[in-house]
Length: 270
Image 1 (cartoon, rainbow, N blue to C red):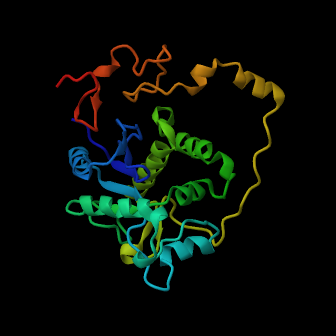
Image 2: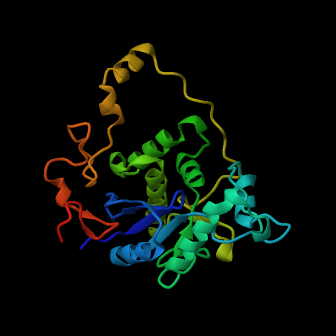
């Protein structure tokens, strides 16, 4: 039976989740799942100790910013402001989707309110987690690469992650895993609390300039790979290997692994 220590969930374009076990191995990810009952069943089967959700946990009060968001902004971390419900527009649909994820998991995972994270659904913000882990604000043009490097630095097998949504979800799972060890902090209080993967926050995070361009010989070396190999995603089973054929989705024999979105094997067998 598969089990996860933590589960990170991004709510962009449906729920995309990346479960991590205690060894920081990425279990079979879930991509763009819109059925919240199915998500709840998957989470129930994995029994993570904490679920981290990339979404605000509530609307702001009229005429006020959420305290957690205000605190991050004061420390130099910018983020989308959560409006009061009556001021929400089409852009804020992803927040409404996030609220529905919290509600779907609430019977087993009540909202995090600060302190110990065990058994809760905790709000996290990928940019804030990345900045906290890096200790500075990096170049926004390469944020996915920066987050992948941070995951790798902290022992997560990031090559198995497909796309930025799974990267962000894995960053949430790592945030939760660090918090389970008690090495975390939070901003905001009560249901407004937002989880961060460091025990203390500086008064102000410093911004660093963009990294210099690669030397020409380095660019040439990177460009020498076949173009289809640079774009080809890893095996869907999560092993991290790249299938040989451009149209292949699995390494030989790996389609027998369990797809967590259906709880069946990829090849359709029970």
